Image 1: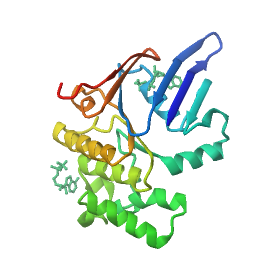
Image 2: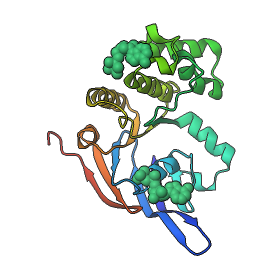
Image 3: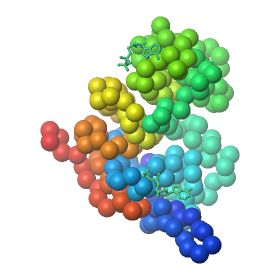
Length: 228
Ligand code: ADP
Ligand code: ADP
């Protein structure tokens, strides 16, 4: 599904080139649940943003379902992003002026899904996450855990193939974090490929594979032992 080949990301200043990612190679198959870990500043978010087509590498090749993303124009990339990828952020990134319902509906509007279909797809999300009674509330009226549920609903309402989550539980209490991880596990069982960034060993154990990043490179790549 994802093939990264010799990906570099750097920023140039007048006197020097600073590498954020250096020679990153990574393959992710459909159905995986992969966790990126590593110290702050290692390049994890940059890597997630490249995979999510929100940022582009300075050099190297990125294939998504064998399509060369590194050669795509912006429009093509945003279409790919819209159709195949859901993104979840640490700080939720909900739109304050929109209700729960409208936040969840947003990606469907961008995708051009018809009115009646939008209605049933949003209703399914509200039902799934027990938010029917909260559909007309605004984000600030919700707890952090609930806001992240809306963030997840918005990310998956369009039925993406890939779910990217950058520290989705970073602002939450551990019980809320556990709830989010259980949802991820369920979604992965249903077939969505997941890549998450986390600092939590406990969260990492919900995944199947742990890739560690340090100083802009991958330093280890291991399967999670069942029952460990
Ligand atoms: P992580 O998610 O692992 O904490 P990031 O990908 O956010 O790491 O950042 C990696 C490093 O790259 C950090 O030192 C950060 O300051 C730097 N960085 C990220 N984006 C840019 C940018 N656009 N320009 C300059 N430096 C950047
Ligand atoms: P959670 O465990 O999901 O974070 P909380 O314990 O923070 O929930 O909140 C419990 C209940 O209080 C929630 O069902 C929510 O509806 C309500 N609530 C939480 N924060 C707010 C808020 N800022 N405004 C209105 N209601 C809130």
